[in-house]
Length: 257
Image 1 (tube, one colour):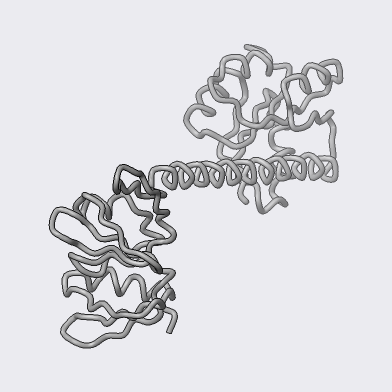
Image 2: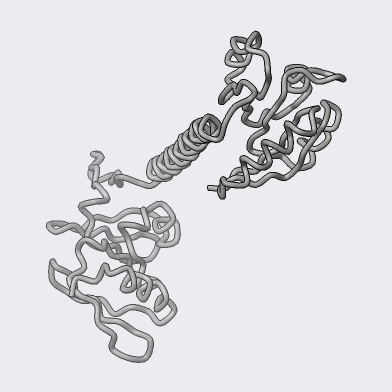
């Protein structure tokens, strides 16, 4: 984890001393040095550092005035000879407040705090991304069909998609096969395929969609075709134009040989 930092101090010797102390820190990269607030604002805008070492009292504007003019705040470690600003510094969530003259050990403590904050920040970002992914997957799952409503003799039967072994084309209808029964549903194969969860269903032919959980084995027979045997009995030969889908299914280790 590399930290890009800028040193801001109107005293040349103070800047050089900090440069020397930071030379021992392999994870810290100094991208700029500034001798006043105006210079600091320019360099922060150009370099976009992770961290700034900021003196409080400078001739043109003090450190707090610099921070007020920034649209995006980097992490801040104050370096000053005065302890009167410490409370105000921590009110703006400064990483640390180093009183001059500070030594190498005190600087390292401040940097450790900085690295810990960065780790927590990365963990927080990762957690947010994972949650976003879970939310997206949840939304996608909500869009897939979970059942088919079948009208028969004035009644409406609900057939759960998870109970469907295979779906076959039949003119303007599709046939829904469960382990016990067959149901007719008015729809095209393309329309039905688009409504089904691809993690569960695999189209192997223009007239056949299979529930992956009911596939017992899948073997190549030549001529870009595969013979798929179902756990409920029966076999389906895949269409040549569906070869890539079947290969992807096999590559995922889903084939229960």
